[in-house]
Amino acid sequence: MFDHVDRKILRALQCAPRLPFRRIGEVAGVSEQTAARRYQALRRSGTLRVLGLVNPRVYGSAQWVARIRCRPDRVGPLADALARHPDIAYAHLASAGSEIFCVIRAPLDTERDDFLFRQLPRSGSVLDVSIDLLLHEYGAPGTAEWTGYGDSLDAEQVRRLTAERPSPAATPPPAPTPEDAPLLDALAQDGRATHTRLAELTGWSLSRVARRLESLESSGTLEYEVELLPENLGHPLNATLWLRVAPALLERVGEEFAGHEEVPFAGAVTGEYNVMVSVVTRDPDDFYRYLTTRVAATPGIDAYSVSMRVRPLKKAVSLISRGRLVPVTPL
Image 1 (cartoon, rainbow, N blue to C red):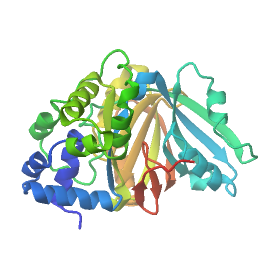
Image 2 (image 1 turned 180 degrees about the horizontal axis):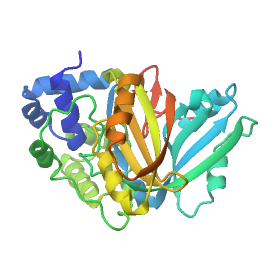
Image 3 (image 1 turned 120 degrees about the vertical axis):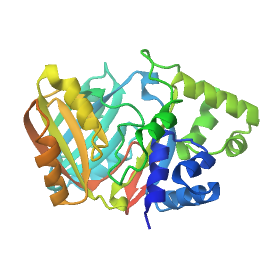
């Protein structure tokens, strides 16, 4: 049963994904062994995955928000094929199942229609496509994640846990070397793998693992993703708010929404609506409360639209299958 200890463990991981179980136990008020056991239970249930990934900025990748309107009777196979593609993230079905929403990672100078339609099977399923560029993500790492499950750490604890995270560099971080491949492959499966386990998987010495891991992290080449399934934590309702905000208020509104516990993501995008906000709540009443209190109290919103998710397909890199986060198997 999900309780206050699990909440503290999740929050600690969001702040510091590779935090040792000893320190996680201190934060959660339990022993190191209990913290490890609770974490493994969340992981085995498919509710949580911690992954180490190469920062897409290494390769100059931008993020594009695509909304693909399809024939409802043909959308399933197309959505599943797109979700399995490595350049597609955060995919779900919306609009009563007739729209595929996804985020595509691709270089900025790529033709938009080209990079999407190279990934779309040739069929008459697609009726319309809109693609907008994600300009900016709001919120600092460790402070902008979804905490609707019940954030139980105070501001000072969060500050201490996030203090050692490297600040994003102004320029793209350096690319990993070919020799880094076995280390990165291991972290892409388990971002919390111990130095001992990484040494076993790579055939490296413990000192080499520690040295290279520190170098990749400090340079920004390696980053960590903490994937959660809110549905398994009692929050099955997911919606996307599309807001139209005056440019002078864009930063303030975006940062405000990024701080809401109901919001796992807020970003500035191109298009008619220039702020995209993902919202996770318990049920329609909870979502209505959010709209009529927190959204209604935010000045600067000229118009809004709501897109309801009807079936989740993919987080950043994990597929969602039968209520579990699972790795993507090769096509």
